[in-house]
Length: 158
Image 1 (tube, one colour):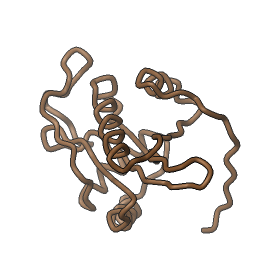
Image 2: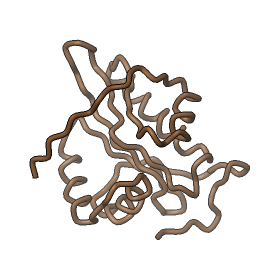
Image 3: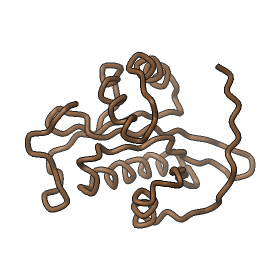
Image 4: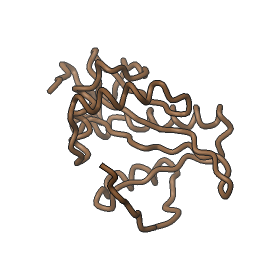
């Protein structure tokens, strides 16, 4: 696992950070961060997915780097629809467990919202696992509200 020498904390927020596009070479660290959300992540699969997403114009994959270490990432995409207008959907957003509460998540959300406005999206939408009450409170503090609860149906094809 990558370590920061002088990692930001709640009392010492991050001063030097870079938001940048993710690259296929970020796959090992993206996989580590994905596991922190409770998902299995194979580095090869993450690399293939990053490669595919970077070719999709409506999809954005960005990361936050501190001291040359990837400490967070987000994947979001534009979703036009007939019934709701155009949304920016946050598919995934993760900040390293050790750095949550240091302002990195807020910075990512603000960046996503800026891009959504520039694309004339009507809203930013995200979902969060029911057990992640800390994340729910974070989103509420940023002005997000629970809009609906719904059942998600899944049919595995592979």
